[in-house]
Amino acid sequence: MSLDFVLAFLFIAFGAISFFTMLHLMGTGHNKHEQALRTVHRISELLAILVFVAIIAREIIDLVESGFSMRAGIMITFAAVLIPLFVIKNLISEKYPELRNRLISIGTTVLVFVFVFSAASAGFYYFEAREATEAAEHAGPPLDLAAAKDLFVTKCSKCHRLDAPLSETHTAEEWHAAVESMRLKDPAWISGDEAQAIAAFLIYVGGSEE
Image 1 (cartoon, rainbow, N blue to C red):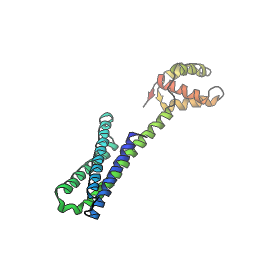
Image 2: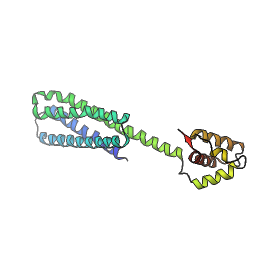
Image 3: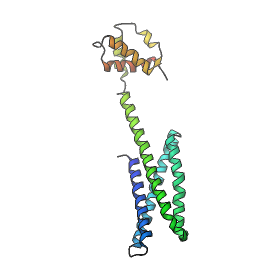
Image 4: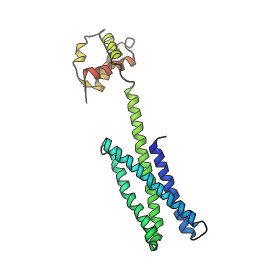
């Protein structure tokens, strides 16, 4: 379980507790549990804000390390909306009791943004992690250059000279396609894994266009 998932879950949980204790306080009026509910409401709201700050801090670190991205833009937009809502809600709650009838609509808006913000944050990290995993799987194991060179010399010298491929430059896809076309001429001589290693060697040594 990733830290980003944990932060998103905590943000939703504390935000929901804060919202529903606020609803209960406004709906029941004064009762013997009011002080306890107010304490729970304030603590949960404070914890939600602290988790929110942690999420934003991680986004800022990623922004500094990786540069601006669509994810960073969306996260900054959500933060720009949530921060004023938090401030307005607390000002009304503490300083302007005559406006407390607006707290439900503000609190509902905050809760909706909490869910959307958390889902967006977790979703971006999930898809990035999946893309990284797929890229790693596509890349295969690290290239053993010496072994790949031996395969290239042994397998490819059967049919043609070796200087021509080493003097050419192609895209990675073209190298793979060229080696695969050679492999298909004699599949018993070059296996699929050997073809992958040879193509990787040619990309590394012979050059690859972007």
